Image (tube, rainbow over all chains, first blue to last red; front, side, top):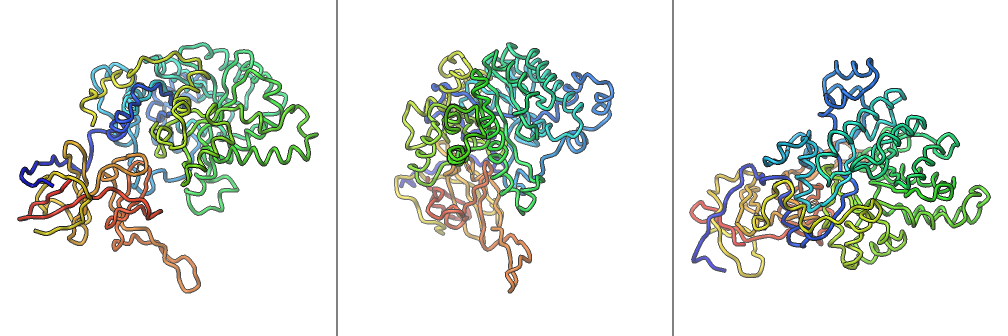
Length: 420
Length: 132
Ligand code: FES
């Protein structure tokens, strides 16, 4: 060790870096990820702070007045269904840099200043994470299916989708969306599908898993038919609900969070498969989001085993349930890396993951994954890594190839040489 | 000269970080060395230096909270009585996903096989130096 020359370190005030994703940017640079097409199939906005804009799209004058005469804090607390749980573990986790997050907002350059703030902050985090395209989803609106007032669900969903599709997504070709369907109301769903399909950046539709609609019922078939006709992906986005009866016995959010996401995804996926929806609507690409992967081989094993014993209860099926499920798409986050790499490999093989897994960051939520979470998997081939971080999604959503390195420069991310 | 931690093997350069009083007890500083960032922490008068790169997904672990380990106290009947933050067992918590590391060893609290990269830290004439 050389002590002849002693260099002076720069002490960073309050142990804070320049921005929240400095390390992610550096890691992406080291791995050459700015030259790999990466599609983030699940990122989020914090739409609550944007309600003054969203409200303008609410059609019912009385619902609109409820929002106009309520503070943002009360909107969050009283007008949108809540999702209980301390995401930040008593301040241990520091929130990311999404627009409207409490702290850590990104420094934007002059190009960012001309964009909608949600678009600008999203693009800035994409730049740091080496992401070329992102599909942007809501945060509190994921709970809208829990609202007991169906009219309110309709009004808010319509207003949110218009705001997202008309005001946010058109800011940049790299921003994509899958508008939310108010699935309790098939007529309204048709209105959304007609209004938003084909709009720039709309690559499919999404249903939140936190709702209790029996989607096998005949009344919903017209919705699936409209999606099937257009060959569009339909995503089921999961979330936890600690107040749900089975989870109310748990004394930590850890348990409710770990089990909640796959629980709801499992229930809806089981219903989709056993009611033969993939047979009835073969052009729909079924997609399940934010529930990890480990539940998929488990569900395949359970359903295949039961189906062999009681196939008469699922008469539309022509194959084992697991064979349909292996054709479905699953977002990666949270990627459950097993302690033994061979176990992770086995999990991916059991679900046909190299063909169907879609990288998702979930950024800026607290359990986000950087692309390196996939890229660094020791048992994945180079081809599989590329497929999972972007190739599978590019095919599914028919995206054009981004020019190499696009994400490093689109909104003024620091030059490559600044990224250590 | 006071040597506070054992060094990692390999060639290192010495960096002057700050005056020792600038690091608060149960607090720390983040030092940018140009090629990496290093967190220097003080607990019970001793200093500990770690790479600001979490072993999970590379997050800025040294910009995280320094907190006592959470302990749940049980009574003789094994009933839960109270939770405490035990400052005799300090944890560095990564601000990205919350992995906790034992401040003294850098080992992950959930699995001692994994640990943060540690650097030699010394104090000379009241100045803190890191070799990294
Ligand atoms: S990067 Fe530190 S906990 Fe994930």
